[in-house]
Length: 163
Image 1 (cartoon, helix red, strand yellow):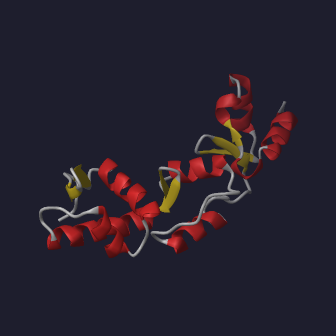
Image 2 (cartoon, helix red, strand yellow):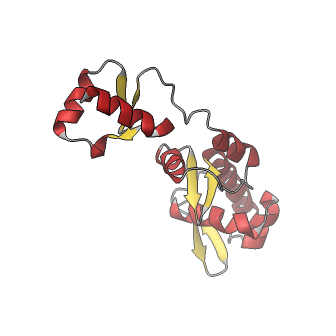
């Protein structure tokens, strides 16, 4: 049984095997195997470094800032795991690095200090030097987090917007 588990783990690639697919006996065997480890609900070889901390797409998205690249060619399971870990935020099919969300929040705070009655999508677009393709998902995320709220054609400060 242990050899079969090792083989199954290897076949699952960099993310490892989802522990939810194992029965109780298999889970018990995994806990006894010194060469396997469970991390974030996945079984991986114990010697394997976390493959997501240095994932190339994560670096590309960080470098892209408020205009991230398309996730084409990136395994959907990898994207889901990066989102689950809080490294990426997905909104309307666009993946932003968490740092970009911080930048967007700063821009919203700045705009609201200049326009206390609220700011438009166009003002946010100009302030962030990006396009509507990225502005609309960014504002959607800020709304979802409670940083901003939509009132007619304006965005006003939300209950969670920092000072």
